[in-house]
Length: 198
Length: 215
Image (cartoon, rainbow over all chains, first blue to last red):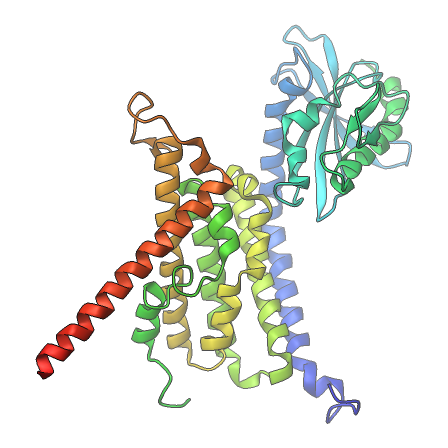
């Protein structure tokens, strides 16, 4: 690029790019409007399908979504996981947050009194294949089982103690992101859920 | 454009074998190695890439007279990224399982060199018809390459093809390594050698025949 401004200023140079950006933006907005509900529906179906894995003894048919107002003031759905006879087995909390590459969508299973994590599942992620993407593996997810919610989950790169999980790799962005999302969600929803009617 | 540019038919045929994006140009190695463990993900990748390649080639060709040389790569990338996002949303809506399995490899089509190279070499210089033929030819070439690698890997690695058992477990002790990353490199290397060997033999026999017909 030369130091002098190009002839005619920016608009004659860039009008095509600006126009295309507007046009493509509209096309993407249209796509999202048309397909968004269907994608959400797919995610919801998947959520219902994995709830029995997250909360032991839960029945897919007895599970229902209830709206809870978090401590940050926002309403959000959580799932009541009930056994076939209707007894409450636990809760499944949908959660999301920023990962290394894109948003990470999680499901967190907790006991009825929200004192212990019983399961974790990654609904959606776009982390680095072979490294961060291993957060979808059961080996990583199973580490969250049995961790108490009294203290935030801590990510370590050495042998984990109680309440800690071992990061997937030495570079811990994806592992940290998952732990942060879990901690924030539990901090936000623990008390409101305890106050909900059983 | 100048008379020396290839015609639509030449562009179409070139894409399939003579200028095959994988076996001849060695472009787009990331999806070639990453999603060829089985036919289903490989063919989903081919379909998504073909959609983006065709759409990008046609649009770039339509606006080729308006492109400013120093802003052309920006326009290419913008166009490709838009269609990749559309393809990604479409897969998530209609083939959710496959979209989850392919994960970030679908957004990574944005950086697939096959597409930007076709925009630069063909679409930004030639008419819509030629650009379309070029994109279809290249897509077929890409499909042929990914299909051949995935066929070898899925059959040897899992005894299946498109998820259907072709080599029962009691006949074939599935080579697990073929489904894993080393299998991708081994298969690509061997098929690359095979395609080049065949190409060389054909060139030699052609040269020989020409010599004889002259003599």
